[in-house]
Length: 446
Image (cartoon, rainbow, N blue to C red; front, side, top):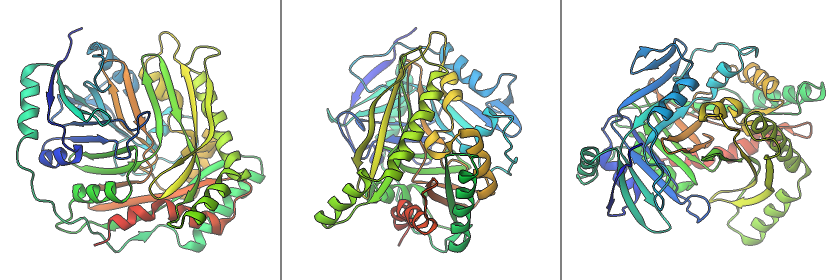
């Protein structure tokens, strides 16, 4: 294994440097906008990848060439073939694969599930091989270029030192939902019927808002507005040519550090209030809610089961159960599940065992996914999938792509919803879903 080339650079805001890179091939920004010591410490910026792994309805491809391997095996082989030692003292992503996995990729992992083969709105998976990464440590207020060699580092440094381009418009209007309020509440009631019939304990049901993209609209300008309005720990902006993605997710799907695995599901949400006493009352309501705690515990059990498939016996544990986390616009109940990978298990095996995340499917997972497909009646695309990186040094971090907008084929799409249980009230679930996406929609306002 060859150690990467490392050079320190001036530590600007990552999104400021990303603006200078717009127009480069396959721009990727993984940004911690809400910054803390234990969570949200690092950000990463990359472009112009060496190669691309892609999974579509037509199969698995590397740089457009069909591959015999399934895509998760191809990812694991690529990581092994490009192993680098971890450089201590630097942010953990020091080169590797990065991109997105769509929610609909889950259909590949459960071939016996009765899920229609919807016309896709994006590829199932896109992972680019980035040899050079700009990495930011927000606690130290330092930044570095980490690259395979000096030439790669020079190229990236030249790009981030150039003048930024002018931004276009971030405004969009004319949004239409795929559900009327009445139809959405009927969809919730139908889900409750499935729960009472014993099919499932819980399902995550969402609605989609879409609108045509006009001339002059700039997805990166929207991302800059979104990160300001809704700062989050696992934000991201991707411009992969035919698709742009802007995410302000607070939720981690998986973190991998050698053999140590962590998942952080969110279940339970209340809006913030500018009045401190009302905000405190909303916190008390959330933390004492039997419904929200029951949802969270169900998903914890699901993830414990998922992780046990690839983890050392007895290593799966729950360090945090239903902890409170507060963000700019909402309060959440968050749990932490940790484990140790079994020897021989690879990153692709971990993704295969846990994707899609249980917090955005429900439990039991396969039947919940079938009911979601029946009730929503369309693909989700990147929404409720995952964005993040798989490093050549054994580190990985993937979000759950909620609070996320997708731009492709001339359309903008935003989705939101919530977990449905036997206690769910359709009108309240409709309002909770709107609360979750309101700040995203506000970021589109002129």
